[in-house]
Amino acid sequence: MDQRPIGVFDSGLGGLTVVKELMAQLPNENIVYFGDTARLPYGTRSRETIIKYSMQCIRFLLTQNIKAVVIACNTASSMALDAVKEVFDIPIIGVVEPGAAAAVKATRNGKVGIIGTEATVQSGSYSRAIASINADIQTCSVACSLFVPIVEEGWSDTSIAYLTAEIYLEPLKEWGADTLILGCTHYPLLMNTISKVMGPDVTLVNPAVGTAHEVKRILKQRDMLNNSYKEPQYCYYLSDFSQRFKQIGSRFLNREIEYAGKVDIENY
Ligand code: DGL
Image (cartoon, rainbow, N blue to C red):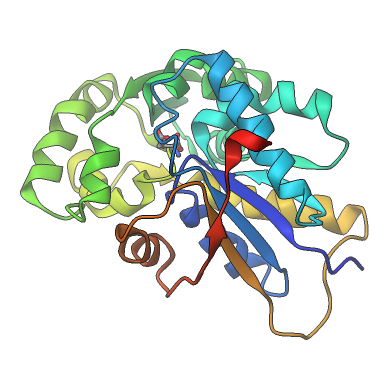
């Protein structure tokens, strides 16, 4: 048994969709969240920068006495997971492999669509992870850059979101994907809109679900689950604070969030 918190980081507040899933599947665990809101977005940055930022986020989380790291950000998971695993001696779990595994299970026609940020799509991370499980599965990826600002604006269920989704997703529909990976922290909030565009026969995969499952599996295997009945503690740190934090944060998490403090992330 290990009562130390799980550390979670993301480029901003989107990673709270992963925290939501961790809370659901691991209700006893304490969580420390770091959102790199000062340097958001990661999705348009270079590999080098994303690796540097991810290292700094993990160094900060390590000051919080964490027992494992979850990289909630799809972009950072795609670009930096291998690099950070080489440096830090702590379990580090990204969202890509669990998301890919869930899609492989879900597909019936062997055609999996992937949507994410520019960096995630360019990295080819999901396609590689899928090929390593089943090389016969075909993949097709589309970067949907406007989805992040649409979600942050609170416009997920509007006609603007729908029209934008139609433009991005039409090629994937045409191609015949029967499964679609929502490869970005923000996209689960667009689930209704994306489902309307893709139709009821396309399975939407939220990688957060498989990620939380994987975190549970790894902690259990190492006897590191928190089995105490104490009320869990949740702490949210950010590298920049704005008034939108509470509003956007509670939208992602479906509950109120209390700001723990600002972190000067360049010092890590
Ligand atoms: N959190 C990022 C991701 O999941 C989206 C926002 C960004 O570009 O930083 O890829």
